[in-house]
Image 1 (tube, rainbow, N blue to C red):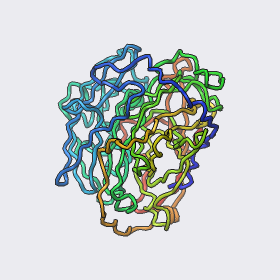
Image 2 (cartoon, one colour; image 1 turned 90 degrees about the horizontal axis):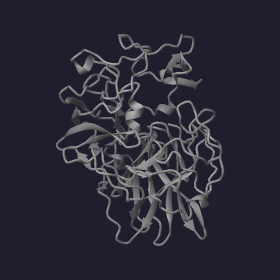
Image 3 (cartoon, rainbow, N blue to C red; image 1 turned 90 degrees about the vertical axis):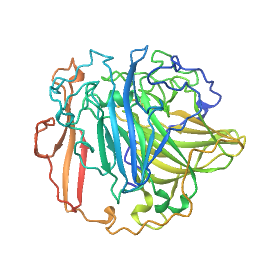
Length: 488
């Protein structure tokens, strides 16, 4: 684990006055009832429904659905029988998850053919060996869990469920030694997973017990925030008058390219538990908290391409100033897992959260009458990267009658037993492997057919062979390797 969180080059240009006094102009597309209904801009942040294991088993029935919007985009959602979306799955180490997934996707975009090198369909009747890839194909990836890549567990290369298939059962046990913390589930159909995630197909999964690793968290109320990105609701709108001028460039994916200024049109809008925070005025979602109340916030970046650089800002005097918060876990691993003294909570004024990553932190709510914000500061994604500018996401409002969060950590936890193996960061690697990412577009006029490669240094780049029966890399169980990966 990189405790400095400096894996990304972040430009922290950050102009708080941009957000002071902003109105709450609604998005051009406020929510309407439908298959995948969503809140309107400026609403309070709802809490996802919690589904908890009982007697060591969690049974879940999910249906994945979609609907085409007036602007041509497609929403995706995981629905329970009661209509609630994207529940938070809560399990303990050793628990059994039995999840039945029904594919009710419809063909909302008949022109969405897969790239030429991917199979468009399959005649196989077995979802475990289908490997069909289309916008109506479905499967699940349980991001971060130590679950075998086998069918009915966490295979995403060959498992593909079609709308004509019966409900498909996922069944696996959370390992006894799975670190407690925040994980997530999402589709992983190659060539289409980005569009499905962009449409909202994602949800949080929590392995319980972080208070056992970090006893300071006992009895804290907890809040789950899933930050997703989506296509711009107002793509043709001019920037807000309070925004510094910045030239809008478009990358080959059609998104606003990195300006390197911290401002300008973003590549994607963001939402917080589906409450949109759209460009250009960024009307903020709202979280109400007790004055000075200490809470554990579990934040998932379920974006397809957007990097977050999260910070808390409390208004002190006439200015918004950074407020320290205590990071307790990164990507499902408590900081206390290293065993290093004093590393259970690391107090910081910001943390970078790449797409797919998670951060869990403690914050103290603002006093009554003190405006407070959860913001994402700009991330410099480099030449050719998408634009991730400064923007506010959530207004944190202190109120004496603030509703109590749905979940609270247990009191007086039994401490986690000391680890039986050495901390990974203290182990000398057995060997070093060098790998690199690269890409190739056979026809520059058709960027959708770009092939992406992950290659071991010295080998020839090649796309993954769906019919392969041998792994590209074989490692020995129990050995520690150091992988150096370059993005070319």
